[in-house]
Length: 93
Image 1 (cartoon, one colour):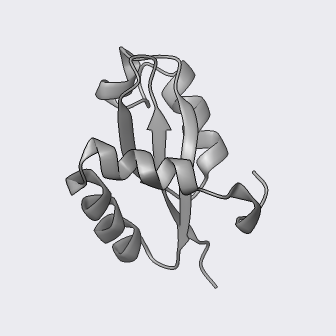
Image 2 (tube, rainbow, N blue to C red):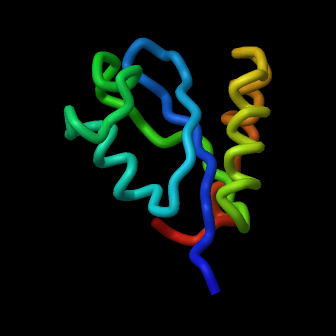
């Protein structure tokens, strides 16, 4: 069985939200905060970043589709997702 994929939102230092996908949210968060090679160009200049939303999906395709949906949401809609996010329903990172 393949490992799950995750779609996530990060809160950047400038209060913007960044969406991405990964198979390892803990590692990816660390990369966004510390690596100039592996971090997204967007987050490199907006550090520190914090994980504020996470969804678990089955396939990379599902995660990519959901990421696309999140990126198309308004900032207000993304903020509602973050506000209503309950981390207790997901595996501990």
